[in-house]
View 1 (cartoon, rainbow, N blue to C red):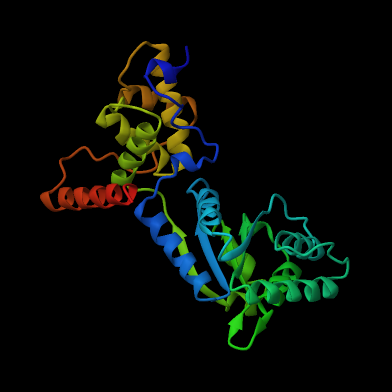
View 2 (view 1 turned 60 degrees about the horizontal axis):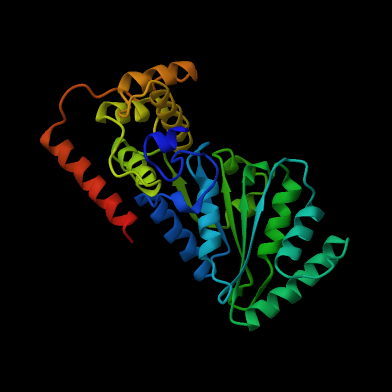
Length: 301
């Protein structure tokens, strides 16, 4: 019997594998998605989402792709897995995913094919969108210049292509390899780690989606999840998953703070945020409750 059955869950709640089922619509993720969609719908050309490791950039990119209805958008998502890609490869992949059949091998010829395809998409009353995940891997000026060239594909008063970069903080420096491209950023948003209040909502949300009828973590244990993860969702998942498994091994149906502390030590994690031992002031408590209410409202949309 695995721990999911032990805790009477339908699914394991803290897998780090991307899953739309467990998508957590935090206030900042909602804000990010609204801003990026605004950039696309108003043909701004270039938008950028920055976030640290494990903060949910890839999850948000996939969520955004799912929101781009084929009736209104021709969209593609490219994930950069290494920095050795060439401008021709990038152009060819974008052309293929936007509907160009048999892209040429010459960059100028591909641009011509892509321009003709973008005109077709425009005439259909749709928008062309390219999402680039792990965009910090585009570590050459030539690649940045290629994207600047793509953004030059336009007709009077309208850009034919919108590009959204998702990447780590170093993406900002990477884009400066081509200053004219960096200056074309129309919308930029930065994902930050979850607050203590958001961490509690995040844990509760994933457990609820997994079928939990009650919260199998004591409050102090969730505080420790936040303390050691620094509010980074990927680390919250790793800690919570290991803590639930350890509790299952001990036949304990309530995850205690000591279990989280022990698991964090085994994983070599150190406190990222201070532990709040003193009672919160009335103002701080009110702010905390307001944030939780706001997050829960977002989850119910």
